Image (tube, rainbow, N blue to C red; front, top):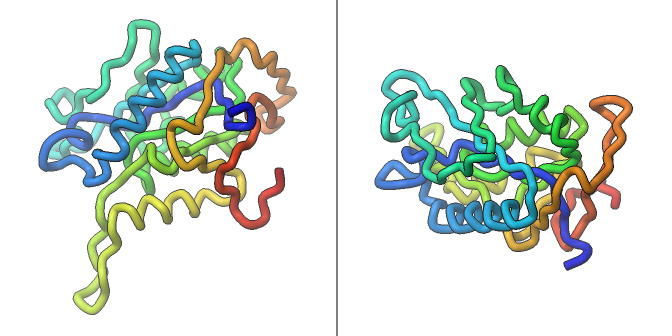
Length: 216
């Protein structure tokens, strides 16, 4: 376990009722929900920062604000942060960057929905800001992608989620499961950053997937 990823914040992306429960839920929820819950337990036990992102969808969408589907499916603790967002990236138009830096965070685990949209956009934005990013393979999900035409096949939710992981490129670390992600308090990392792009940190690598071209 000593070589598994160690992160200092958990970002839970859009785990809202419309996507988690009932007929409209992502078909990957039987895998994703327990994995996210496991990461929450681990983060809380370690005293790591926990941030919930809550998407404000369009009128008529399942996550339209103040509708039942918009509510968080997982309850945030009294000391945990909930940030509402209007765009795919959890950094756009929110205080997420400030919250992470105020807590001395250098490495984050990102989980939730949807893999190719808000999860990927938030992960990419985090990497651009110098954070190290872990996205456990079992801890994010999405929906099937319909075929472009009648002569083509659609893409399963599992395939779409996997493609989203791969699209993030060399900077991402992809453990097999939530159990492979370890947490600790950010203030123990004693980070010293000279700039947002100065990267490092509190992350050690594990038996996780690294893309061709990545170096340890």
